[in-house]
Length: 412
Image 1 (spheres, rainbow, N blue to C red):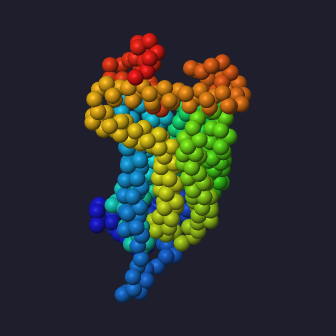
Image 2: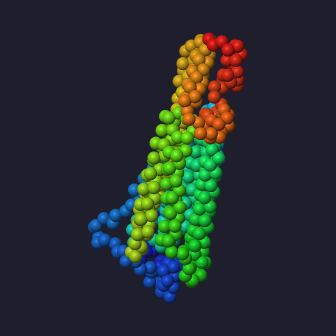
Image 3: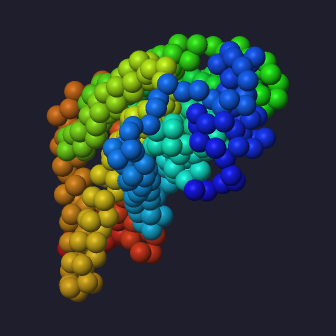
């Protein structure tokens, strides 16, 4: 058992530190006049000898490991392909998802700390007073960082939509920026209220409450959970609708639109997990004071929600990046087996065929005057260079269009 000598919860304190911890919990529960020398009384009693106690420690550890691995795998793959492919352009959505991943990973990392030093997953009667004090240390930071992480994940998705449509219209540009401002304000308010929702503020060290010997006046925790989850679920629903409304108005391949929409559908899972987590937290019964054991249910939903959110934010980008990388590798393989002259001619013919198909598609499209750069006036556009980099750049840096023009318009 790690840590200094300490008595189990429910037993008389073994050290002066145990007494201070017991008194801190008594003050927090409004029992400041109780005698700490008798220990912290809990309703949960251990089972008779010979019967299993039951523990969620192993499942909690496995959940933490899976969450960290999946977050690292999806975000790491995305950023690695961005960094190693010179035709792909880094953007604010990449930096934001990196920050969101690091923030989200802090939640399972805190629970790994709880498993080792705070008795997470054990019943309260198997936990020492020292471990119970450590359990409270990470409670407030984890609660605050959760909503910061989900806000960063949503902001990265909005930034990706902005790059994909390249400000297809002024209305969508305003909507995107308004959504980013809304998420930022909600995250800051949630962070502020979580830190200062008690007067005097609870620092996380239950010993400090015992030293003050004054019960803090706090907001109702259930009200805070419902309020925070309200903007969280509302923004999730808005982000689910955006791909279906925006992407069909821009000039883009249908397969590309379909990929983004399918990836966005995974967001429905986030909405379901958020609703389930809200119900679990709002209906949690702490009368038995078995918080080290029952807190694992809340963590399971929170970790699943963060992991699925990171995966959802990365899926559309990975679809583009992986497809583009496979195409480049296939082209390199084909080019290495052909003469330079023939490979160059095939490359030019492929480019002309793509231009012809795009021109034909443009002539048959009912343009609605959406604004965009690098397009004919009044026609919608998609910034291909945003995701893929400049199209058709050869090794010398000259574009294919210039190389074709240098031969006077004669195609080989």
